[in-house]
Length: 467
Ligand code: HEM
Image 1 (spheres, rainbow, N blue to C red):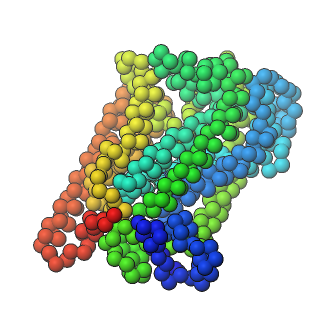
Image 2 (image 1 turned 180 degrees about the vertical axis):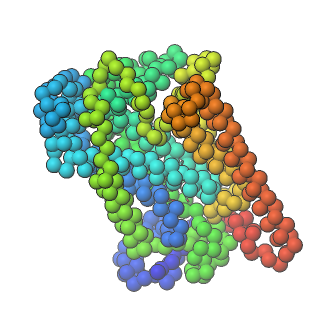
Image 3 (image 1 turned 90 degrees about the vertical axis):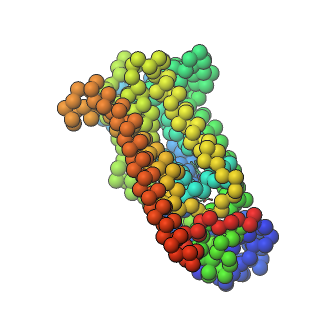
């Protein structure tokens, strides 16, 4: 196993104990430059691979999406269904619905590829969320990586919008009802709402679906993936320019460098070590998606049928990653003026704003290149825990009908309780986290005061940067 270091001065990058393959390639390709000379974090910190899982999920989304895009037809006009699903034989269904049914049940490998796309979207968003929390709890958003956090949170926002567009494309009853919730929210924005939906989508959903579906198809298959791809490139460029946050003392002894020097990043080289790890992550991502696609092929279309303009079926919910917004809509009290706008647009917008601006709210003027220990940061860790609990409780609140059924409490009453719980439970979790961690930090400080000679354990993360 070879270990390399990256210095703040890229030309000073040094290689230690390189493998023969690495040395051979380095002689010919000058791998010690800024890009290929990048030192990747410790291979035992698996959470650092979540970014790669996100990246590879995106690759699979693009590959499978290209196949689907060639066969999908964005139309709301009726056509006679001629595929193999007996229930719909000879019936009139929208063109978009018929084309997705054809992909799923008539085109060889169509169901599998569509399901890899479906589960790929879930994995993309889930891995991105977990990656964000890894970055949050390890303090990797701090100076100088604030900009990469902003790029990352923009990617999260775009990922959610991309998912929303995809949900609508088959124009089935379930998806189109859920899409209607999003359209109503956009339309609820005071003054500009209706005009905005007309400009962006060409009309109101589902009445103008004939105009909206082609636009959504364009946004979903071309515009948004292009912007996401471009921003991923910026994200990776910044990562390579600024270097990864480093786990202090990780491989420093092996590389024989000063463990307290934040300007030196120690890790494994891209070739051959990290490339091998990446290949494993890539193949594992594909394996997981294939298993999910093969074992859990979601059959929403034939069950719910095509969009029916005259019905609003009960029990429809947005995809899981929008459940927290749905929860806000459910618990927002009626007496709040413009309740739909406040619950569905304003509050999520404020939460999104805090997320994007977090590195500036928790600002540090000194550059920090070592990962932080969440246990030693009670305030930030408490905020992170409270945020996760907040999203979970809101997602449960989105299912207020089911909660009412399970508890036997009337829906109106249960919704009020859920409102109180949404406010209280995250605060309680945040306060408990803060108090427990703070006591631990104080105890450790007392112990280190009592043993002044033992100065190399607790002060580890406060090593002064020599940038
Ligand atoms: C399309 C979505 C995204 C992709 C493909 C992606 C990919 C990656 C990869 C491969 C890395 C390096 C490996 C790692 O540290 O896990 C990384 C690092 C980073 N990402 Fe992302 N990411 C995405 C979204 C996000 C989001 C939503 C945030 C935060 C809001 C974020 C913030 C960061 C930061 C600050 C780093 C540097 C971490 C460090 O130096 O330790 N990323 N990203």
